[in-house]
Image 1 (tube, rainbow, N blue to C red):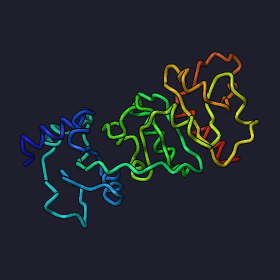
Image 2 (image 1 turned 90 degrees about the vertical axis):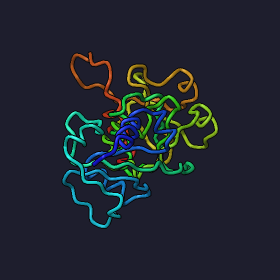
Image 3 (image 1 turned 120 degrees about the vertical axis):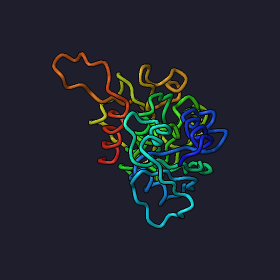
Length: 241
């Protein structure tokens, strides 16, 4: 049976300030939990209605009812398990290869998908502005489908970080060079901007290479692409080249 204190703690972890205070976060669903268990994340508790996790210390597993799981889940329709993990110490940024940088990405689903895309395309470094959504937000963790375990995420002063880098810096703009006709390097920083406003004026000033994904529709009326969709296209082109 899950205790009142455990319910209070886990539900509080839906808020960033409590995740930061306790240095904990939670994940839901067997696939995500297994990915995290087999990585560098330290398991605190595992609550399960039915899922089996061999090789885990039995003292950390608590069998609970579906009703109890609903009390601690952040999902409308809960999975059959929820696990609480310690937040690992952040690792320094490896300033080589391709790095994705996010300028004020607010939507947790977009951030989680971008982390998953980085993992798919072999991008190990993701740099986020301080205004970007928290990677330990339950919706972000869920959207990564376990890729959070394989991508090194750091929150930085993005303008300062870009000014200090030796790598070429690329940004996505409506008036940029057609990415399909561009010669793209194997190393560089790729900046993706805010869902509503794109790359901020402060960051735009320090971007030397402007790229765009051209529109092919006859009417040319679509304003923009979803930022995660755009990230997928851009990473695909960088890797293809």
